[in-house]
Length: 153
Image 1 (tube, rainbow, N blue to C red):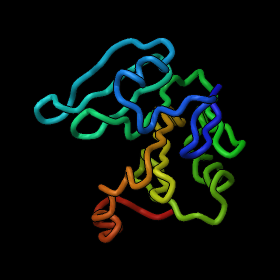
Image 2 (image 1 turned 120 degrees about the vertical axis):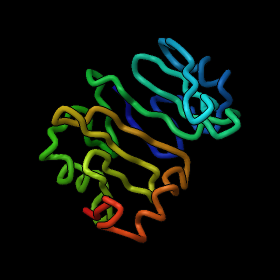
Image 3 (image 1 turned 30 degrees about the vertical axis):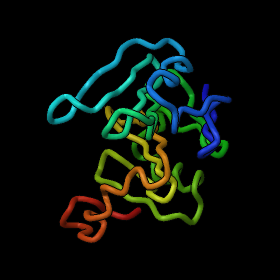
């Protein structure tokens, strides 16, 4: 079980801002390092519970994604992992009351908090928390709501 407190750590461990070496040191059950992207340049460190995402130079962890569907992920006291797809929006509204969220149909995000959940196979399967402005790459799509496939919720 993990309890997420934004920008202050996850169960006493803060991965965001750490170097890859520090992330691996703090990552329980580290499994592998994966390089992806156009030229296989973007680094990800993977454990059974967490994927760490780094900046373009692979110097600093910018986000982590919780991926173990059997692990409970609590955000602001609300458990998110395995929430059925039809309950995702009402559940997220409990987590962030009064806040505006966006979705592309499978990712549900709050850019203000650099937070998202990923839905697959009819339920929440992943929870991502990033550094401030981590989801800024969606800003262009926000300007073209509907045409970009991004919608408010």
